[in-house]
Image 1 (cartoon, rainbow, N blue to C red):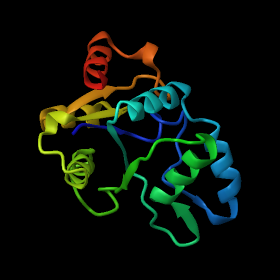
Image 2 (cartoon, one colour):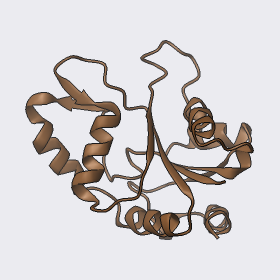
Image 3 (tube, rainbow, N blue to C red):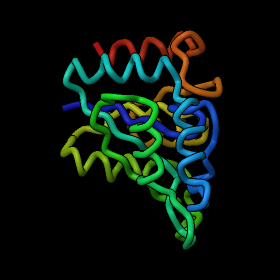
Image 4 (spheres, one colour):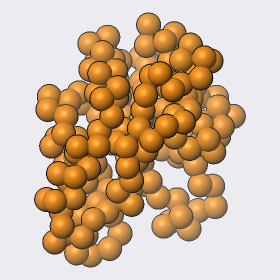
Length: 171
């Protein structure tokens, strides 16, 4: 079993939610961010689903404040509003800084999703993320990773080596 794990802000969407929005602006914010979903992401994630690969979302979005709407609920709402018939995503929102952890990268997310999806080998998980720190940490931990260098996932902006990694992984 293999899985592609997507970052959300600046990767799936061409913007940043800051992890939560005020309840009073929830509908307007969800509508706004749903229009920022990368077209290349929608196309590729649909192709990935057809190939039978699992997909997840690893995000630092975590609802902390009362009277706010955020974390995994915000991500799911944005996807549902802007990407009709989207594939099933396993979403894990956890912010190490909020939880007073010193390692600020996505490896905890990847380990959680690896365990949830019962994937034994880290080389069977591919992280797609705009943060070079997250990409480097994932690679150092034995995961595959692709660095998004534009605001929002774009196939044409990937480096040759990242495009090759993605193409070989998806098949």
